[in-house]
Image (cartoon, rainbow, N blue to C red):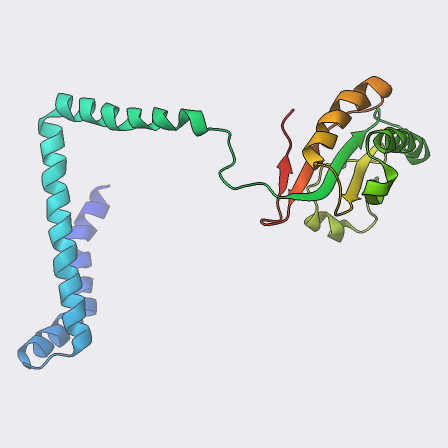
Length: 219
């Protein structure tokens, strides 16, 4: 520690003089030359404005520290205005557009073989077709288990962990009924129709055609 102090008071100033001496000499000759470029003027104006803002900030900080109680009361009063946003918390400020796409994650009991998982998926599909008419379903795809190539995981949410679970992707036709109503109906029926030990409804959402994001339907 003593050696560091001695070096900072002896060697460091000498090295700074060697390194920054030409720079100071350059700026001194430029300032005495009389004519300055527009970039130099812009830089000086910026530095002058930055210094002015810094001085104002120091003055404001000193005033806050000098009047600590008033500053604390004022800060609490300003932060309390955030409670005005409580009625809007949890709401979507962007209008949801029904794009007619449902994503359903189905999970069987751990250790279930993929052929047994397919049987459970078939049972889920039967319940889906009871809730949604066939003339409104455009396509229904089962994505069970993990892909052999791990490269595909970069384009998914990673919720599938093995051959005992997967996703059912449903695309409805244009003249379908509201997707949110179907989602609410499926949530109520699937757990009753299929034992909870063999099925876990992880997500049931519809896709927003404007933003392209998956939005969760309310119960």
